[in-house]
Image (cartoon, rainbow, N blue to C red):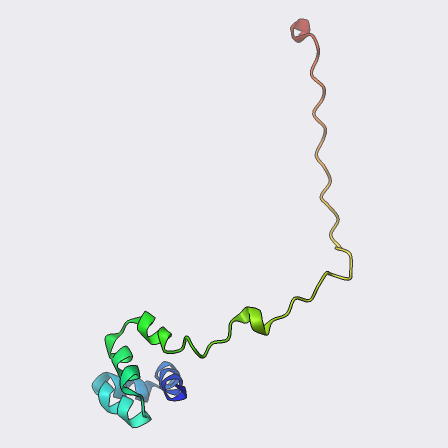
Length: 96
């Protein structure tokens, strides 16, 4: 799988590799040692098929990151001040 990742990285960064891939993709894929399945996925130009080749190698972020727990320091930002209170309406609406 690292051959595929290396090829995709080279294609993203190296204009000479990009040109070689445009002119003869099969030759370049054979040269870097891609498997038949990898070559088929690349030839399909479907991002879902290409991404599926990497699906087994990715580690979910939730496993690699840990919950730091509660914040030991209080929040430095105070709550915003409350707005002015609405005046109580007059009990007699005809007083105006």
